Image (cartoon, rainbow, N blue to C red):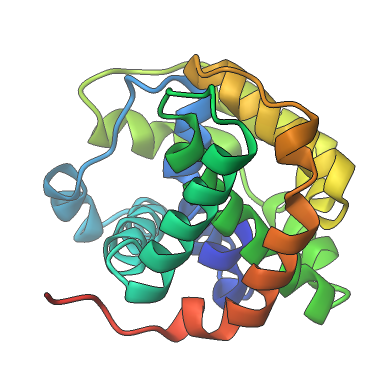
Length: 219
């Protein structure tokens, strides 16, 4: 799951909704800054209701990821896409195909949600802009062994750039995916992978309801 899929059910709870995006935002801000459930637990019972609500949103993200990444449909699509990418670029022996197969599913779920609900992305950003990012950064620093003073700046850029709209277009999606590859130190991909994106998009769109409601793989 990505930003919108984590958040779209909570548009009426701005602090909670914003919290659902924190772990993904921290992957960009500083991957050493991690929020763990054990550190969130006391914050969920805080007398400061804002702190408790933000912490609950972060915990919701962790819970979502736990079940989502264990579903059969997600893992089947991940393997399918990774194999297609290896076939398209046989010389690639890196971890890129599996990693790319993972994240493209999540980004395209957001794209599908945005297409099905034309005002959803606008509303999502409107809600984010109601929130004081300093409060979120405070909770992050309460729940992480590593501290950050860069979250507020990133949050402001995130709201301003609105890059989730890019997921709706294949070329712009490819650009954003290659930004991720660069950030995590994996090779950028070229035309052979780019040519797969339209068919991968159709596949994820066909499976999006199953992806958001699927049963967890138990075997």
